[in-house]
Image 1: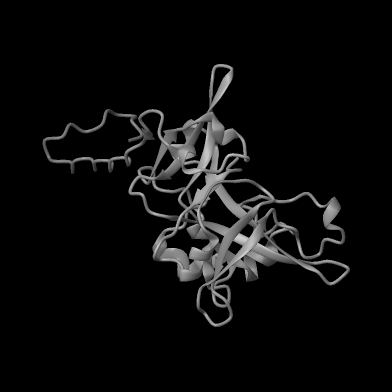
Image 2: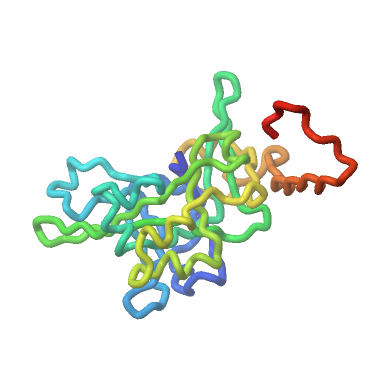
Length: 246
């Protein structure tokens, strides 16, 4: 899931993100943008290959690339636990694709914030050192259970961090994985919309703005209304029948 996505520029990210340009169809093994805090506490931007290779891997050619990491278990998995402790990052995106089965066909949907803002996925990075001394920077995106909108399409979704949580997520020096676990939750039900788009999105050879042009009205879900509190009992309330538990 979430194998393809795109991004555009947002003023909340470093200016160097401008150098990455615009993409509309990014697939595993291609470069993605990773933003980390850096040793100086200033957000740094770099490109990493999408598909994490654990640092302890001896031969990258035989290692399965890890595109996504389940947020519920990443802190304990050997492949991700070091990155969860020391190399957390933001992955900027303006949207991502998911598919909905319609009979025998699968309709691509472009999922994006309803207000048009840029999202930040929770990500992890690793640098793999080859036997010849070469380095490969790689990354993965954390996933969580689907919110109500995404449940129409898939049972998982990327972790979309609230902007107010970005600094805490990036603060690997002071925040351990258990401290940031509460940030790894499904997005609010009313944050996103899912737009039916062209089947051209199925091919990574296509990478242009026309891919995200709406073909129909978007799927949306409004926030759950707050449950009403039961009225306080009054002397006129009839007492529960004898034998009732409540």
